[in-house]
Image: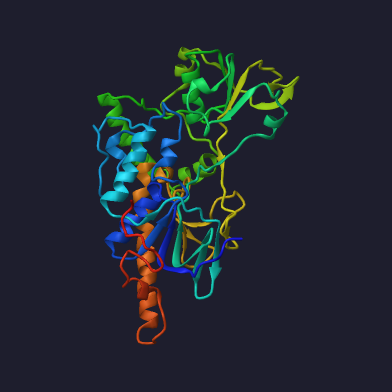
Length: 398
């Protein structure tokens, strides 16, 4: 067992240096409130770089910037995953956000005085506020049926897929018809017979292309995603559970695109095995050499040991990212946290600004309650610089 160090005292601890965590850091820095961002990846933006090679965002660069910094590309350009990763790294550097990469938080628990302790190996952080921004799509979800397939069949989850060269020669079954499943199926159909199983959750009426019509369409999509499909509207509340379970409508690749690419589609789900081969729930047996599980991800918040933090659906409970479990606990980047756009780059800035407003209110209230009492308050930490006790690292990332 590694030796435990003395706790490092922090005003606000942000867990996760993706777009949500960095947006929160930006707003905290603007208010002069001290904070630290810790991230499991070795390099800021790695989560985007580790997607498949041909990945492009569904939104154009014009709406892909975080608060204070536009995405550095033509407004109609659709960034690659690597470009987005590099942008996030440059964003943290530009605003000198204090990021500790390669730091895996294993546990968060409530301690006395409405504070929280986060454990990362031998390090302990004690914070007045914690923002859980670790990412909604981290734990791959693979059906149990995968374990019964013939061992000769090459299996990959979409999070592991990089390019067609990873697969064996021969046909492939892509399981799951959402964004990743459709994109990967079209790419694979160029080099091999490709089957796709699963029913789509519909299609958004906009083409992801560099045309005047598409650019205008994106203005409408952004308005709907941020203003119409929210938890404040009946339509948004009905859609939220479907999106959280992986039921987002198709955008770049539509059913017609799949047909043109030669993808052999089955609405039936992959639910069984026959002689080691995947079987659909309509009885169809698919004879393939490969299976790509584009079956999404499941929430993974078991390391937040705060009763009530997670609801029956596996997602954090609360309003607009303010956790109902305990004061001072927040979350960001959750699908439909407030709106359809909450899980998109163009939606996290608003969600982050809302949370930081709540944190600032909490700091002010604590300062007022402890004024003149001589006791230590949340606001006492706000007088500290953004470098923090117990660390030799400066406030800017290396």
